[in-house]
Length: 242
Image (cartoon, rainbow, N blue to C red; front, side, top):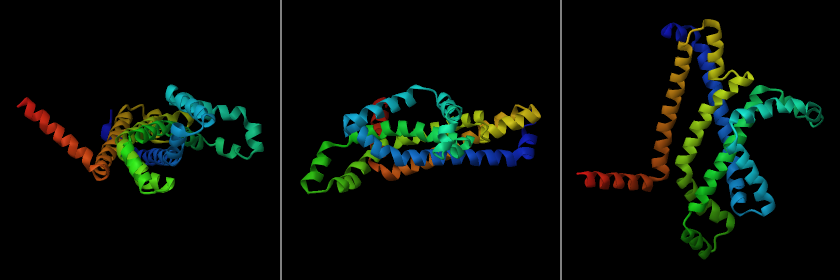
């Protein structure tokens, strides 16, 4: 294996693939972050006619492999080409990148719905009653009381979901999207050098480490009381051991 030679020769390809991976993850998570809060509210307190389809969607996405979902969208859309052409959507679905992005967005939305729903259920009822008692409107109550507390509760789980989606984005390479893994497979097909995959693994590790570090900093900013509680618990445990 030529560990140094691979990166020196193919670093532009690794960089290009890394940018595509980050792009897919960022846009997929952003779309999901916009869709999941209202859907989580409907999942929790919406009419039954809305809750049932949402439950089916969430159960399907969480209960099936992302690879199967990607194949259903990428290859399945070809089965409906005439219909998609009639409504003007074939131009979107014929692009592998768009199909991968749609798959990641739908998958992350399902998981974020459940994360946000759990956060909503964790908001102390007393805070909601206090907001009602001072005459807050529903919109103001959600904006100033419920949603801030919800995201403080859900923030760590949301960080885990983003990391899982970023690593799962490697599946995009199976539908000819040249993300980091796609570029790595291309490099390996030219060189048959396994160090290409070692470099890809190292790049994924670096991205994940940087993200986790930044996310933990944001957690301390958003939920300082949680970290204070954790430090207190660690101190108590250390005292018991001593």
